[in-house]
Image (cartoon, rainbow, N blue to C red; front, side, top):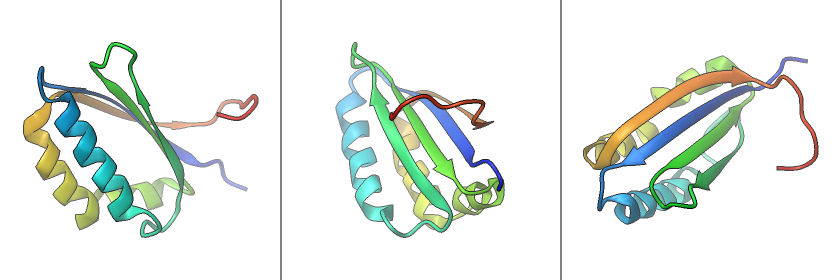
Length: 102
C-alpha cells in the first residue's frame, strides 16, 4: 500500500485581505467537495493572530495531486485568490508517522 501524498501550503493574505480570502476559501471548499478524484481529505488551520493559514491536503497518490493542480476547479480558484495574497508556499510530503487523530 502506498503512502498518501500530502500537500502543505502556508498562505499569508495581504494586510486587510484575510477575511475576503477566508470567504473565497470556504466557498472553494464547498464547490469542490466530493469532486476531486483521489482526495483523501484536508484541513485548514487559521493562525491565532489572524494573519496566515496552513492548508493540509492529502491525496491517494502524487498523480492525483498533480491532476488536481491542473483541474479548472483549482486553477480558476487560484486566479481569484492570487490578487489577495502576500505569499503562498507549497510543498509535497509523505507521512513519516502518525499519533492520534488530527
